Length: 94
Image (spheres, rainbow, N blue to C red):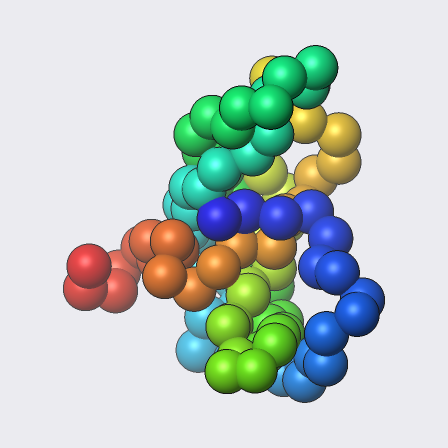
């Protein structure tokens, strides 16, 4: 799942992964379809900053993807938080 902001009600532990900083990556996830009770697939591509947040208990790791070269039509902003399990990093095994 891709997310442009993380809910603030859960504990978060920030970190930095220098091995991923500056790498090209893609992520996908679900997002609400405005005006409906449905969700659809969203795809993003950009550059990892190396920043991550472990969120919740048990923790789920989210990586920050910026300088987006692919995003859903009408997506506001140039960054998105991507769940680690939905992240595909260039040069890393799938």
